[in-house]
Every structure is written in C-alpha cells, then in structure tokens.
Image (cartoon, rainbow, N blue to C red; front, side):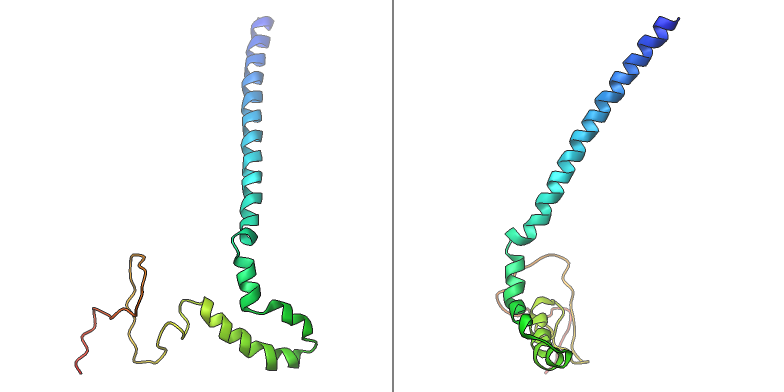
Length: 121
C-alpha cells in the first residue's frame, strides 16, 4: 500500500513539475514580449515625432511658469490640435455643424460630403 501511494505521489509530482516548468517558460515569453513591446514606442518613431512636433528640447530654456504660459503653451495647444482627431483642425466647431460617424475605416484624399443631410441652397 505504501509503495502504491508513493508511486502515485511521484507521478503527480512529475506532472506538477512539468506543468510548473511549462508555466515558467510561458511566463518568460510573456516578459520578453512585454519588454519588446515597451521598446516599440522608440523604434516606431513615435517618440521622435512627438519630440520634434512639440519642440520638447526647447523646454530646457523655460525657467518660469510665466514664460511657459505666455511663450510655450499657445504653441503647445496649436500643435496638440494636429494630434487630436476631434480638433477644430478637422471639424467645424460651429453649433450648426453636422457630424456623420463612419462605421468602417476609410482613407480620404478630399473632404467627404455628408450623405445623411440634405442641404437646400
């Protein structure tokens, strides 16, 4: 009876050990993948684009909050509009304007005329 219990225990121990090793390997792949994804921010050029668009190196010259609010903040707000898809750069912001949301992704060469609105001029 003791021999049978010991053999069953060893078999369960080996299965558990195999599962444990497999989970450790999967965890290793998860960590490596996460580290690679974390570096895509730099390799994709996003960092450089944002740094150049917002003139981040020039922030070293700002020494006071007044200087920041009067000189850099208007520039920052103007540049931020380029990165916001709902900014006034891409939409009319008047109260009488109309918006049509598209359900599928499309590429545009020219402005798209709204189809659901009948404008009698």
